[in-house]
Image (cartoon, rainbow over all chains, first blue to last red; front, side):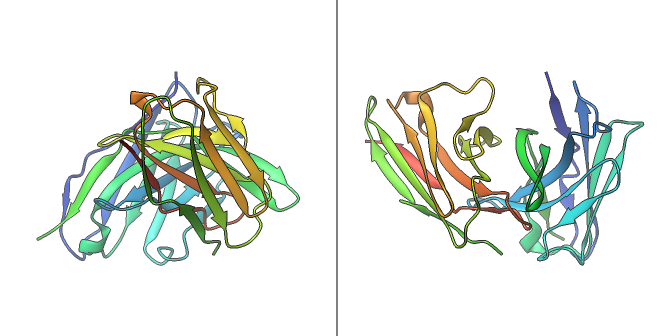
Length: 126
Length: 107
C-alpha cells in the first residue's frame, strides 16, 4: 500500500525558506508513470496546487508561486522535496504531498492525484 | 488559468438522501476532472478521475458525470460517513485548479 509522509518543520520565520520532504513507501519515485506533487490549504480555506515533479526532471509550478518554489526529487532516498522562499504569513497552511498519475494526451501531459499524504501544518510567524 | 466554480457552497441533507454537487469550468476541460472528499482535520481523499471513473476502493454510491465545462458528483444514498467537504479539480492544463468546495452537512 502506497504511503506518503511529510516531514514536520512546524514553525518558519517570515522571509525564511520553508523546506518540506515527502517520504514515499510502497511505491517508487523513479517510476515513469507518476509525478509527485505538493498541494496546500490555508486554515479554513480551499486547496491550492503548488507544483509537481517527474523523476526524469520535468517540473510544473503554479505561476502564482513560481518565483519562490523549487521542487526536487531524490530517487535514492525515495523522497521528494518542496522549498518555498521568502515566506510570509500568507504561506501558513497545511501542506500535502501527493502522487499524480501521468497521462499523455492531445493536450499534452495530464496528471491526476490518486494518493495524498496526511499533511503537515506549517505556520509562518516570528 | 481555468476557474472552477462549485455549487452549492454548502448543503444540508439527511441520511439516505440523494445528493448532487455541480462543478463548472471557465473553459472546456474535456473529461480531465477529478473529485475529492475531505473530512475535518484529514487529508483529501481521491474519489473520481476522468470525470466518471472511480478510484480504487471507492464505493459505487459515488458517481460522476459531465464533459467540457459542466460536471456533477452524485452520492446515491447519503450515509453518516459521507458528511464532508467535496472539491472538484481540473487537470487538463496547468496550473491545476480546484473548485472552492461544497460542504455537505447533516440536516
